[in-house]
Amino acid sequence: MSVPASSERFLAKARDLPADEVMLDLEDSVAPAAKSAARALAVAALKAGGFGRKLVAVRVNGATTPWAYQDVIAVVEGAPGAVDSLILPKVSSPAAVVWLDLLLTQVEQATGLPAGRTGIEAQIEDAAGLAAVEAIAAASPRLVSLVFGPADFMASIGMRSLTVGGRPAGYEFDAHHYPLMRILVAAKANGLQAIDGRAVRILDAYQRATETDRRGAVLLDDEMIDEASRKMALMIAAKGAAAGLS
Image (cartoon, rainbow, N blue to C red; front, side, top):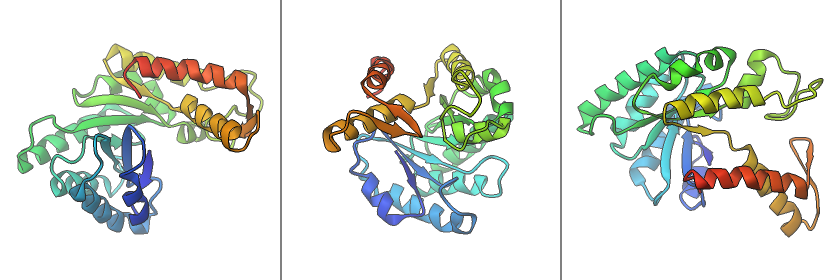
């Protein structure tokens, strides 16, 4: 569950949501002028705790932005031990992961945390990141997952679509098969999780349509989903559950 760290109301609500992992977002959902304030709110929420058994992650800003190092230091030093992993967006090369690993090592040492306490989740969101995904997956022992970011990826290669994760115009096949499979293979070769989440969104949307709205079909990202869609999505989600995801 992604929660904009700039919203105190959403941060408070996230504590009670039935999610496996809560991500406090300092990146895309926060305007540049609000970065500092959002960072302070995230630290306050982490210090307050109350997330139960959920994994708690913070998505910092990209390694090449002026906010990244401040994000890392603030959340790890400000709430020692409260963050299970940092999500690093727009990873285009293993150098970004190496940078975050080194910075985390220094901050953990300064705060008395065990070395390696904080994991890294790397988001693959552009052509360069996909081209280097095997090297990225092996860049740090802190890595716990590779996460596909469809919106930025679609923009980086010029896919003709305004629907996140949807089939671009003019394609007779699912254009996401290649990046998803390549990310999956790189992740599994290095003992990491591969995260996408499209199947769970289909199941949630179909359940709302049938149980709440009393409809047999519904639009999701401008595509019609029905009972057949549910069966396919259920199979994918079941594999995720068998792998330890709830």
